[in-house]
Amino acid sequence: MTWRTIDKVWVGLTALAALIIVAMLVIILGDITIHGWQKLSLEFLSQAPRGGMTEGGIFPAIYGTTLLVILMTIFVVPLGVLVAIYFSEYADRASWLYRISRSAVDNLAGVPSIVFGLFGLGFFVKGVGSTIDTAFFGGNLTFGQPAIIWASLTLAVLTLPVVIVSVEEALRAVPQSHRNASLALGATKSQTVFRVVLPDALPGVLTGGILAVSRGAGEVAPILFVGAAYFLPHLPTKLNDQFMELGYHIFVLTTQSPDVELTKPLLYATVFVLLALTFLLNFVAVLIRTRIRVGRGR
Image 1: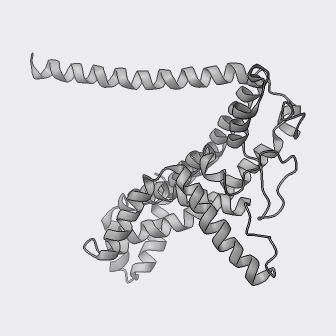
Image 2 (image 1 turned 30 degrees about the vertical axis):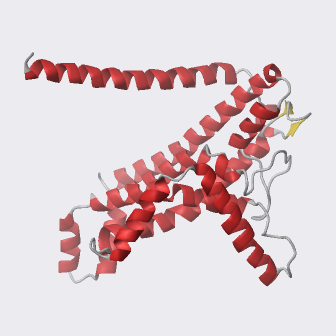
Image 3 (image 1 turned 45 degrees about the horizontal axis):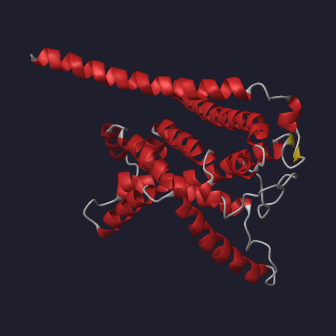
């Protein structure tokens, strides 16, 4: 067998593996779309659940999921960008701070999601929240309880490694000549980073936000302890309110319903809405990223 033949065999195997992945995705999405589309209606999308959550709609869960993802993105992207800038532009690879922080990011990416939920309960709810109640609310239970602010912060910690890695790669992809030209013109290091390197890597920053949205929107385990409500037909209006979330709502319908066949159409429709909402948020971010790239002529 010649090397040319071996190359063709490997190309065929890798192409087959890619086709299998695509086929699995098409089958899953097709099954969810076919069964979920039947239950969709304006009432389902715009009303609160009722009748033991077997009637009405899922609007509180849609609203809660969207608000959760937006708050998570607001918290995680700035912090992730700052850490990535340190790793890419300022860190001494031989320093102990770089080695420890790099190891922390790598280990953080491998922690099971349920552990983040327990961390959020202990640190944010019982630690930070109780401290705020003691300092500003006379010990009354206000922030020392599960709330959407703690759920979004917990998901921000969960998705932080994703943002850091993607933004760091985008920063390192900026040609070194751009930095050298800026420094040669008299700009300081910080001016070069924030006025030359970071704007050039902005599409990569948005990519990190997209990946964070994709990861955080479908997570259930981390928010079980820190804010998600079993049944809450009204919308959250304050940062210390609890909320309904699509992923948790699916979990509840799957595990708590006495009649699986009755709730199966609701499950399919809710999963379809969750996927559609995730794709919509990603599409908006991709559209913004594309417009920025076109505007920069890249």
